[in-house]
Image (cartoon, rainbow, N blue to C red; front, top):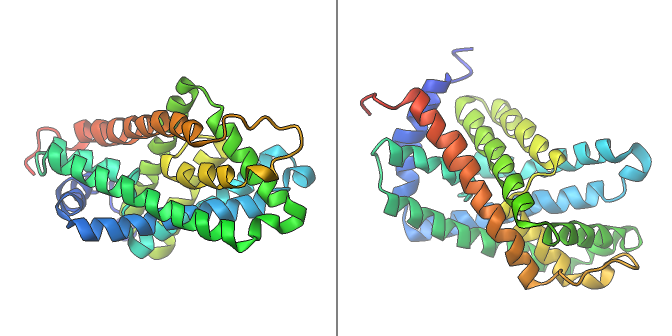
Length: 272
């Protein structure tokens, strides 16, 4: 085990003293490009999950459909972690560097702001390409109807539900990154990404960056909604009503429940 996996205390030290510091000190252009990549990669996973899982519940049931949907979506974080990209939700782990006095709050907020914006740009790039590709018309438009249904469900969620699901989501996402840092082989990193990401998606939790794909693609394709569906909230306002509480929840889940609590367990009182 020692050869293939870094122990938890070691992961905490790497994240606080090395990874977080490098991310906080990265140049604007590097964060912008790698942030766009992360938005693209998460959107790839979201589109794959939509097209693979759009009709599976009719054959295998809702539970298996959610499992397949989550499994397909996990490719997004695998690309982020292994190919290299800057993902806002994963970067909530930089909080460990702040608490360990290796970087400043200002540097943390700078990273988060640039990366969040870049993730949005990357997500919208894939939204436009998928919208232009005609792929939502697959299976008689059933894929497009599924995309609209996913988006519509998100924009009709109340604040507390979105906040709670955002907390639960990024708790798991940051644990996936934590496990990927612990793993020392590519296959280990793949499994580290797969299980927590599959779990959060199958459970119905909310990821701010994924929603930068899921909701805009639904807005652009409102006309593909199933007959009789109320899509009155499927607009930019509805997008913001989802994105704000989900983002806040993601920060709580990642920066507090993972970064802060693990800092107190493994790093507080130790010399960096």
